[in-house]
Length: 156
Image (tube, rainbow, N blue to C red; front, side, top):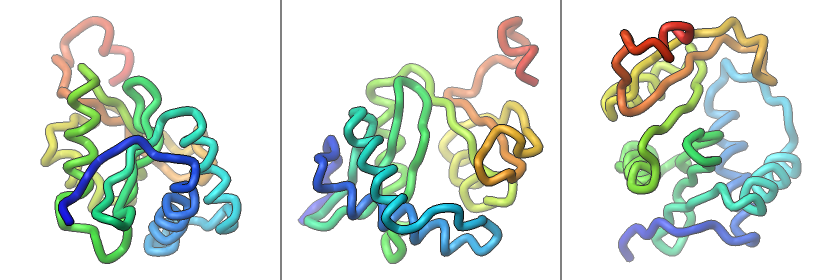
C-alpha cells in the first residue's frame, strides 16, 4: 500500500500519541514530562482542533500538527524514520501555506539537519524559558526570509 496523507480522525489519537511518546523516549536528552495517556490526550486535542495530518500506509507512520502556518509537532514512528515521511508531511503543509514556522530543540541535531535540507532558516534561539521542557530551542522559518527585511530584524 502506498503512503497517503490525510486529515486525522479522532480514533487516530492513540497512534499519534504513541508515536509522540516513543520519539520523546528515543531522545534520551529530552525530559519525559507526560504519561502515555497524556500523550494520547494531547494528540486528541490537536486532532479535535483540526491541526493534524497523518501519513499512513494502512498503519499511521507519522503526523504533523499545524495551526495556520505554525507547526506544533511533527513526528515519525520508529522504524519509519529516514524513509521520507517527514519530508512528505512538510511538503503537504507547504501546499497550503505560504510560510511555515516551527521550533526545535538545539540538542536535536538530526531535526536541525532535516529542516536545513528542506530550506528552513534558523532565525533565533532561546534558553528554553518559553517551552515546557526548559531546553534551549531554535525558531525556524520556511521559505528562508530576506533577513534584511525590517519586520524580521527584531527576530534575529
